[in-house]
Structure formats: C-alpha cells, structure tokens
Length: 393
Image (cartoon, rainbow, N blue to C red; front, top):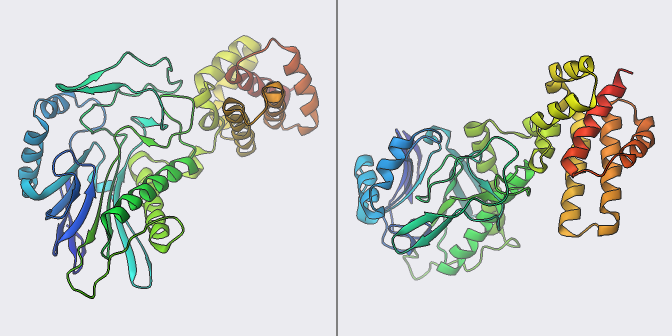
C-alpha cells in the first residue's frame, strides 16, 4: 500500500513492513544498529514488526539467535529491501497502527510516520536499568528495587524490540546539516515525551511519569543539497519553525498511535487509579482497603461499584492533584516540613469529592490526620474508601 509519493521519497506498507524509498540522495541520522548513525548512502529507511508484544517467545528466541547483521539481512530480504543500504528499525507494534502526520510553514514541511506502544516497558529517563552491554552482548541485571504496582511488565528484550516502543521516521523536505539533524532528534524526543506526559503515562520501573520507553528508535532524513543555489538549514531548535514543525508532527503522530495500538486517550486516563496507580493506589489496593476499613455490606457495595467510583470525573481530578503533591514532595519543591500536611489536604479533598460532600473536607482532614501515618498510596485509598462510606451515611 502506497502511503505517500513525492519527488523525494515513496512511503509504502506491506504486511509487517513499512519503508521509505528515497528518490534522491538524503542525509540520514538514525539509531539503527546496522547502517545507523549519520549516513549519506542509504536508499531506504524502514520499520517492521519483529514479534508480537506478549507471549511470542519462539519468535523472540529465533530473532535473538541471529547476530544483529544476520537478522538485519534476513528481515530486509523478507521485505524486499537492500540490506546494504537500508536502515531498519524493529518493534512489536502493529504496522497497521502506524500514523502519518505532517506540518508545514511556507516552503518548509515535515512528514512523520510513527508506531507507538507504551504498555510493555514505559520508562522515565534515569530509571534503574535492566541490562548491561558487554563485548558478548547484553546481560540482565538484578531486578531493580521498584516493583510496578499495576500489571507487571514483561522484561524488555535487549534487541530493541517490544510492544512498548515508539519508532519515528521523520522526513524534512529541505537540506539540513548533520548538526541540524542531531538537534532535530532532540526535538522529536522532547515531543514524544510531551505526548506521554500529556496522558500522564506512568513509568513501569519507578513511581514517576514516563518520558518514553526503553527501546525507542528514530530515523530523520533530509535531502542532500544538489545545486550551488541550494542551502542547508543549520538549526532545528524550539525557537525556529523547523523545531516547531517537528514537535507538532511528532506529538500528533505519537498521540494517535497510542490510541490505535493501546487504546489510550485522554478520556480513558480520567480515573482515580490512572492518577495514583504509579504510587501504589491500584484497584486491588482499594478493594483491600475497603475490606479492612468498612463493614462487610458496605465493602461489598464498594467492590461492586468500583468502576463507577474510580471513573467519577471530579474524583479523578482530585486524585491527580494528590499525585502531583506526592511528586512535588519527592523532588523537593514542597518543603519537607509541609509535604505531609499538603498531602493530608489533598487526601481530605479527595475523600470529600468521593462523598459528594465538599463541606466535610475539614472533617475528613481531621480524621485522616488522627489516623496512624501512612504512605501516600494507603492514605489515598483510605480517603476514597471513607469518602464512599460517607456518601451513603
């Protein structure tokens, strides 16, 4: 299927492969292990689904059994692409979920095609690593101390694949210096991160918000100047139009990919647990808290109506405010002497909103303050459970 065709490249998709064939020489910056880095001799850049995201161990073992160059050659030949002049990226995301986005200003335009999934190995830059590369390959490290409170994630493979992967192919219609492409890569990375931050996606390896995944890849291409009158763009920062176009197209494509691949959108992130699960306040934690804090009849009512409780819009808003308070305390923006007091304020507001009784915020705060000091997740769960009980008393 032909997705785009212009005087610079043709973009096509067939089965598990998506590729661009250059019609004129391009300068390409890519993260590909084979034919990657900064190149001017490539004829194709491509993305492909190398395995399914979950439970495809046989396929993953077969891919890992091939050295990087061998797998590259095998995959390129399968797609009908020349191995020696193709930069190939891999993911477990479905190529049918790829999204093409475009942004332009006057003579300048940016085209971007992305695939994106974040449910497998979303990370926050600086999270504990799971792998260490040595001469003979990558080796797993001891499990990090953080245990994800939500569904456990599969350990990402070190072969740069995984359903949790964001892959971007970027095409700039004007010549750019190598330095400009490097700067463009930073803008694409920043924009990818903003798409995740807008959804408040959690890292699966810490309690922070995700900025990407552990296996993200990109390729950025711009045509080479071919006449004396051609000039090369030298900058792609956030203050000039090229940087803005790159960021806009990336954010749009990644956002739409996450809807197609993972079913993620702002409306579906509007819940108490979407806000607080990364801090440990999951649906399971709420059920357990209800069993301990409520009588059996009220606890059963809470269990049976949990989905309606956690998706209440105002309760979700209060939960996100509480999560932000935890974050501000962790990084030191809130003074340590007031961080717990601020947390009590937000927990009381959450309880009052769940109870549909904002006039009882002060009562909830006094009650929460009198209880034994708890971790933020436990305090949040108790606020939700007490708020529900007050709603019907």
